[in-house]
Image (cartoon, rainbow, N blue to C red):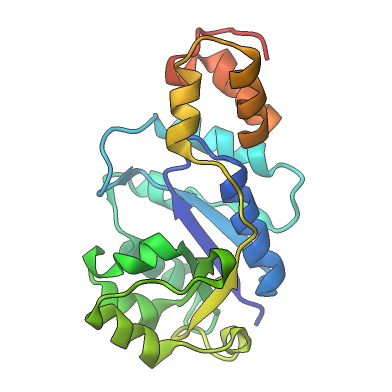
Length: 222
């Protein structure tokens, strides 16, 4: 079966970097689809924007983008979000033979051993590690051993439901949620507005402005 990709995150807000990563995973790993899973409450983060707003922004961002799909299971489950629980839910729903591919960044790979039940992840899904400029992650001894044990070529994804770590070359994109939220708290200016337009899909930016998120006055024009 063609593998299904899984891209989690707070998406607070979703931006062009998230979208490029999802598209790169879909296209370069030959995935049937990539499910974007907004977290209810990421346990390693503080307070975040209401889940209904974040889910709506994901819906607007992926509209018309073939193979990108919103999955609400983490929001519907509520409470702290642990990836291992999400993978178990997906495995129960999709069956034991469906290949699943958890898409993470190099920074996440470098701290994977801080995640709940992290050694169990590889038995539930493959892991694709997005790398900019072919730069390998800087891993501690435990994670290096984990990487070396499971690292495979991308062709391995379709051969088994789980068990491989593969490289995912990622198109570099200069965008971050931290910067976007900071910009939205600033007074409008040509420089600010140009930068926001480059980082945030137009439909998402309009929603942020109309809903008054991140310090934007409600009803601000696009």
